[in-house]
Length: 461
Image (cartoon, rainbow, N blue to C red; front, side, top):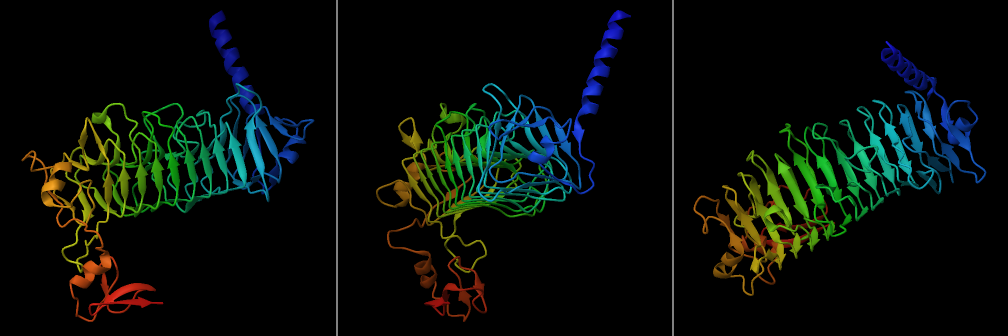
């Protein structure tokens, strides 16, 4: 009986502690940390140095707003979690900092879970704390923010983590620096629509977990754009660059684009897993080779698709210094690395991918097709002195090496001086249509740019 009484007493104490947590009343109020420091029971106190110490959990209810003011410094104690079910207005004019209260403290950070609660983050530095966002009917916008040294206590999915499907999210001009876990991620069952643009990802996943710095599950009608970023690894043996996955086999109709990124010094550059449709274009990948066992990774690009339903388009990528150039470990995905024979075809692709010094064990591997599908790979520059069929065959593994594997169609290769414009011109189109540089025809120019019209190159302004 004494043991039962002790257990009941502990439960009552825990329930009392939860009841004492401050929860706003949802009546439309705006709460600053200064205002919270003047409300008894919030756990927020103003310090002598002008910072605010948060020593207890509190919740901002739906309908209310939590606001960071200009030059705020917020210090969160160990295990403290701030839950925002309303709106998070974290957009000071110049700067604000959220950090831990002392060395060794591991606060849980911000959980923005309101279905209708938007998050606006601008000019904020978050040290040792992260953000979990779950606004089903809302979005997160982050501009000019820094996420650094995240301790992984709020989520193992990222310093910025999404735990519910939502659309219209934007992360732009932000810095993700030396976070314990990866920088941005979401769950396998909750795809999100997001733009990640012009950000720096530097040495994330310092715990050396098997995750890329940007780790997104895709699906549904959500669009993903990852563009103009620098993704620099810390030469960790398990952490990769950019990953898109659909391991749950979710139906998908959205567009996933990875373009114009510089990706270097990771375990691998880009990977897609499962039924993923992606355009991978004009990325530069250098020295993504820090996998210790070549059989387990180290590719500039890896396309893993046991479902045989992925659609991957690659154009204009530079791939250098990987243990492998492009690998297809299994399955029969539809991969278009270059298809130049018919400039009028919907699947026309000028290729223009370049391979430089990718290999392991003293052997160069530009493209390793261990799957069963035919891969079109025309118009590319291979790591050989002369772009001849005999030479290129030496850096490609496919049906010619194992009859059970898919064929790689790699001729014609890119020749010095050959351009997409010249290839279209060579077709001598005389049908009166306007062809853009991807070979797509239209009766009139769809937008300003360069077109081929009746075999002539024209500029439409």
